[in-house]
Image (cartoon, rainbow, N blue to C red; front, side, top):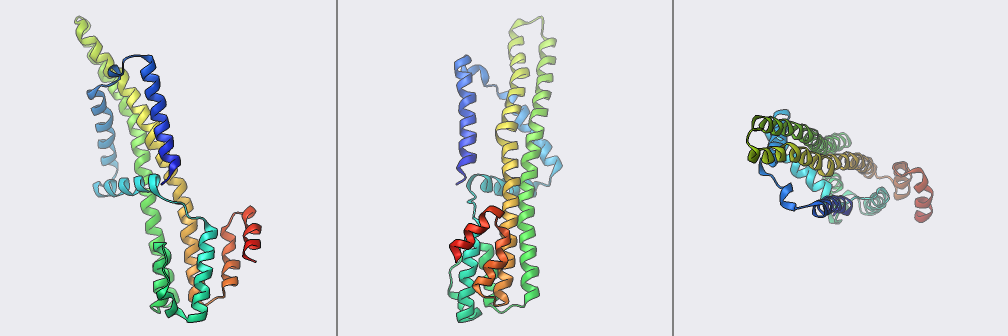
Length: 256
């Protein structure tokens, strides 16, 4: 679970809810037409910009990654790949079949080695798999950003709709209140959806996409070292460049 994402959204919603509660009646901030304008309009605009199949899959993957994706540290991957290199060096490629690997991408690379595929096939297959995984994450990021961009815009559209309705009914005071509610609450809803949920989630997906790119490329290079039967120490030496500069010395000392 990504607690930072969950805590941030819950805390933001609590602060807004508390401000509403302290400022007046909660029911005054609930308006169905405003919700329809903002949510329906932002959803429609997103469907116009992206294919339907992409929107559904990207929202599911993006939401899952933003809220539940566990970050894997590069030094843990390096140690695991070095252990696999030790197994492959002592037992040969077939020895890797009996090793349990949790990371799906690494497990696929290890299986390729155990099955005896050649160097070029393994690299091309893993590069294609990595690129597709990153593209799916980037699709999720773009779609959440599109919803975040559209929500405030439809909030303004709702405001204009409410103002037009209000001005058209100036002679009937009973209709001014509901029209003013639409005018104000659509802007509020659009701002909350964009700035509390969609845009932060889009930024989180962009960050996780960069982290995933580093991890997947590290694994790809590590698998190629396994395929070439490199020693565990040499594997660590070649993969240490994926660590931040300040963490390399500590990793080298721990591995010594």
